Length: 243
Image 1 (tube, one colour):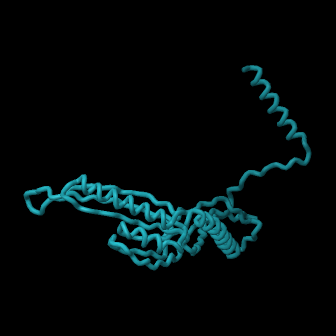
Image 2: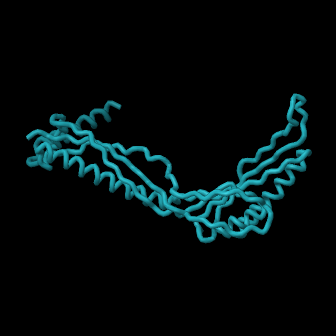
Image 3: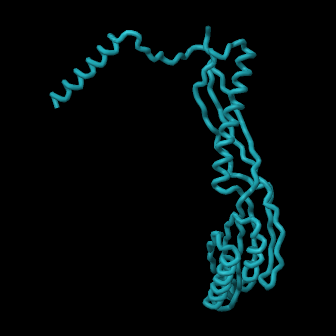
């Protein structure tokens, strides 16, 4: 341990001597803290075409016997899932939200009269052209709760990159305008810090929603995917250095 310590000290001394003795070596100046500090905010927004849809289905039944109610739901959901996968092989089809709860007769007796069972199914797809056909196929066995249109992950990533560029450009323009108003030349403006605002979840501009019975056949519905508005803010600290 002692030998290693001496080696480190010697190496550090050698480096220090080299730095001092080397002519023309540039020294990194310490950051200046004088001057006027500006707090400015830049913003950007982009409207992008929705390229992904999520359709929510469900089946619900009520029976006097719980095993029978569950069997009916299980079979109808299995048929619906198979139908959705056939209609759109590239879609992601998932089940969700299986619930069973008792149903009592109204009044003070609280007599058990049956069981209500419900299960949900979701379909996520980027094939918007095939969406009406897939929804109609699912409605042969399931009820449609709603359809949401949104940006896919790839589209969101692309939009975020564009938003960052536009928000920073907007911030730079505002800082430059403030510097000009204060008669400060560009070479005395230093950007010190950037903080990006947390953008809210993308909100689709269009939403298709309907309720339908599970009686076949079902005509294909009409959908308009619409657009989503993406927003981003950036707050920056800029210092106007004195002459």
